[in-house]
Image 1 (cartoon, rainbow, N blue to C red):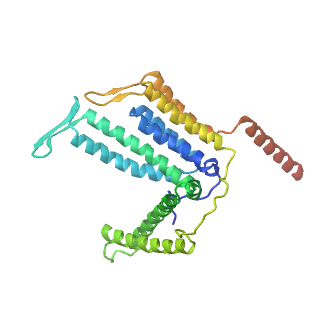
Image 2: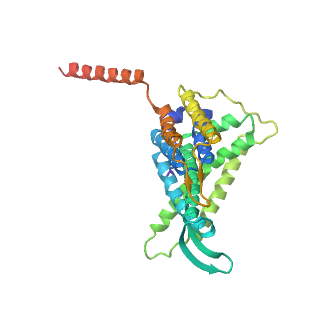
Image 3: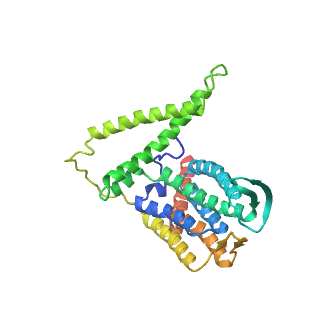
Length: 312
């Protein structure tokens, strides 16, 4: 059983792109999410990540991140509405409690919590697409000359976290299939079994690394040439365009948002233009040029003509 967040080799432009280009492209959405608090712009950033994930074939990873992110978003909005008493528009006037004080829920506190939830959701979606589409071995090869041990640790985490998630799914499925007469398995028992299995796997991984010579005094690792793709420039330029445009627009005062003391959302045409441009830039590396489309159409027409001639 493979979790949706695990990297699996597949044909695709983002999967074939070099690690620096893919990181720059997906990391630009994270920069965009932290640069703005305007909900319109954050929704546009989420649409851009969704476009990238669907075009790269990572729909399952996007679905998993949305399921977890929406649950976390509801919790964030509820907690922020209960603990933050700022704002002029009181929706629910609560009771006085000795420690928490007046539990007044305001529209502004809910909106501020919603902005935080949107930002976290965009970041979760971007990292989900990264985990499913970027080869961690390429990232290790990229960072090995700079920080070999840190790169190895990060790569092992990227590999083993999806494995632990798959182990949890298998354990939960096995517990559910034991039948109605079996004693129910609680979360604590599942957690203990999962931790025990993770420790066993960590010992096996450490022994394998030791046998391969990692960490030895005289160990030397050769770094081969980085794998490149003809789409690297498009992903790199799209990432630079999204991140650079976000920073420039934020410095220019575009896409403003104020939650307290009353809501103030910038809906001017520059903000709406950014909301339209971001998904378009996200789609740009996956767009096929006209020459490629014409070549594909000609090859299909030639193939069909050959099939008709063969049948005749």
